Image: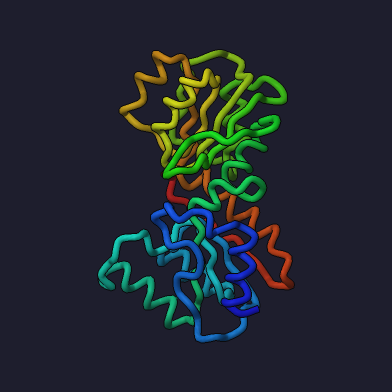
Length: 250
């Protein structure tokens, strides 16, 4: 496999060209010198630590959710320069998929969270930049907020915050991974019992309290490990794969 054939594969699999409003540069962000790819490392962030650990595993490509380019030109200086320099020095290609990986109905972060919670027949939820990237629906069985925390916690890591402001037993839920605290307001408007996202927000605290919404801020990182791991598991290309876990606690 080369970066070109892998780009074709991932573009088709994750429907990258449908998200022209995404500020991220989806797809191949840093190419290699044309060498064939025998192993892909998968991770959430393109940090220097992640790149270093990927290279140590022998990977020739790093697939991430949060890449290095976000629509605004950046000077090749500081940590941005060091990351790019490391990739070039180690002939390590970088591939990034942002909103398409949040929204994908089978492999995405939110599809995985919906499945973990037991959302029956997930429907699109959470409008962001012209797309509903999350999911909502009735639960196959009622869940307490404590049960929901257990189900969505990656590696049993505790969530950032748990806000039990609603019913004891939840019969419906909505999920939007990452930094989507404001979408709690949509959940209140739609009469959802439980809302799961990555980050909390002071601005929505009293809205959720007064709106009687149960909310879990599972952590930006911990709610977005699921998509890259699902793509890794789906990557049946006779390649070696490995997940690089670099939690931030946030």
